[in-house]
Amino acid sequence: MKISVTIPCRNEVRYISECIEAIYASDLDAGIAISVFVVDGMSDDGTREKVGSLQGKYPSLQLIDNTRQLTPYAFNLGIHAEPTADYIQIVGARHILSPNYLKECLEQLKKDPQTWCVGGKIVNQYINKTGEYIAKAMSTSFGMGLGNFRTLNESGYTDTVTSPMYPAWVFEKIGYFDEELVRNQDDDFNYRVTKNGGKIFFHAGIWLKYYVRGNLRQLWKQFMQYGYWKVYVNKKHQAVTTLRQLVPPLFVLFLVVLPFLFLIHSILGLIGLAFLGIYVLLGLLVTSRISEDVAEFNRILVIFPILHISYGWGYLKGIATFLIANQKPGDKYKKMSR
Image (cartoon, rainbow, N blue to C red; front, side, top):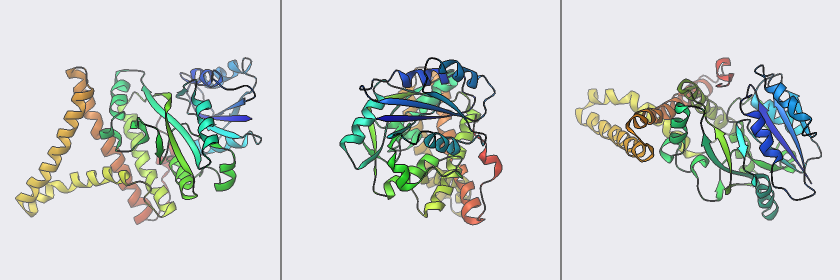
């Protein structure tokens, strides 16, 4: 039996060694072979040299050039690199798998033929104080939405997971990752999984460390892209793939409309303020629960509206671009938030 591991990567010299070492340290039964493909978007920070230095230690480790420098191309290049693989595992370069990750994914896929995809719990890590605050905010349902895989604590079926494992035949059945999608290509693929009768399993007994971005500007850009590209996925499938995605754009519209409610009638304005007050109160309650001191409280409190407004603003831009103007994605939204 063979597992092919694809690592899409660009300029991740800080994390790539730990990522690769964790994969090869996996607790697997005898007879299971691993091939690891780092599909690199022409990194210029020393990532490629770091991978090269590990190839002597791990003969099945290979470096593949991704000259297009976009994630869906990396996924597909890695998947095609090992045509004899029985299972395909995708791992982000900032994802550090637990020792039992691959083994438990295999077990779940073997025992339940209806499961076409398995992934585990994210344990957010950080490289600076800002990253620590972002990680705490992203670990809450208030920050990420009810039912989001980032906040699940119990095993069960869900709509998507991170660092997923698939049986190789899934790609033969439903195709590969959509190379038009700079963002949300995993949402699109997993929607096709469920649409074709498969199930996606979140396994709470396995985990991966994820190194969260440590910059608020990058966070804003990241989540704005998520919202923007989500609309493109929706248009492709002629469906809203999850209901929780509608909350941030509705919140942004509410903020825009709120001042005009007072012009219509003062009571409407006061009702609007009451709803805004509920949002602020929830933010205060959640922030107080996860903060350790006043300074941390003040910083985390700001992160929640960044998550919500950036995603919502990107979603509204997506509606204007894809649904109203019927245009293709703009070039500036194809640049990754590094």
